[in-house]
Image 1 (cartoon, one colour):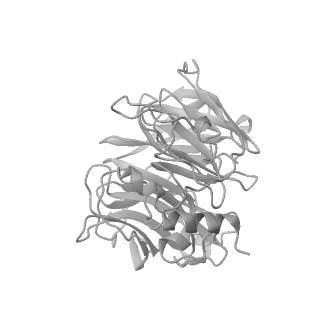
Image 2: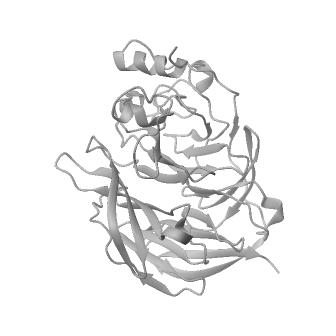
Image 3: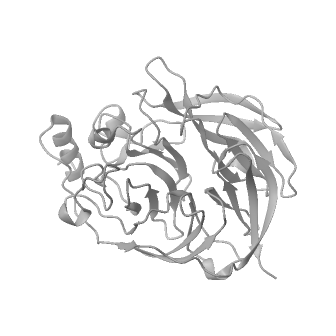
Length: 376
């Protein structure tokens, strides 16, 4: 007998049904919030970049930084930055450009890194996942592993990478590129989370693996603009995504589930017209935490270091609209905002270094790379 989720997807492809899946629990909605009057950390500005987008820590403490126009840098903790050559051609327009960077789970042995970016195409730009070897100050053996089948669309690229704790699978977020209805179409990669092997191939145990093309690679559907994806210490996968006018979401991600966009949202359309709330459509998975007014979440890491013991197991989320850093406590399948700190800048990404320091990158030109350590 085929798994229930596969039967549901078959109905979607045939145009006969929406995915009817159980809600695990309704989450909390966070409204307007005052910033904490004191910060428990000292902030060191390390280096400046031109519209940086993503940061990732290497095992030796250096940081990888992407710039939106299509540049990649490696930066030492002292602020010495070196541009990496051999980066693929990038299509930059609006929210589209160079996106995420992530060292492979075996980077210390292989030297491999993964990149996502918008690539030029005949029918409009496509999100690409690529892999290359970091050889000194150059990328070698650049290999395109996956390319979005459908080109075009506006912003909302997603394009965030996460590896499972075993280091055997790669998860990739794809935004709906401002083509909302595509998030419910399993034949399109827009508005989805994909699960791939490290070489870009399709795992045989994906929830819809019996389907063909993109459908076989789907892990979840109905995700609007997912800019944060990370595994918690307990192995659960969490994703945050930007809502429209209100309704930013933090979701617990599980295989085969449909998160409802654009059919449901805790926000409303930019025009002011209503969208049914999640609680009105129990066939869709509800967020565990949502924000109205929005924080415009960007970047996320679970803290597992020793420098900030009170943060152990918390999700640290950058806020673009919130212009700050948000800490969310996670306990199993429940989440709640604990603290929010004003950084006086749009925070694009968050990372944790091997020594336990927290690194932030500002969404600006110039945008500063910041290192957070405990206040003396």
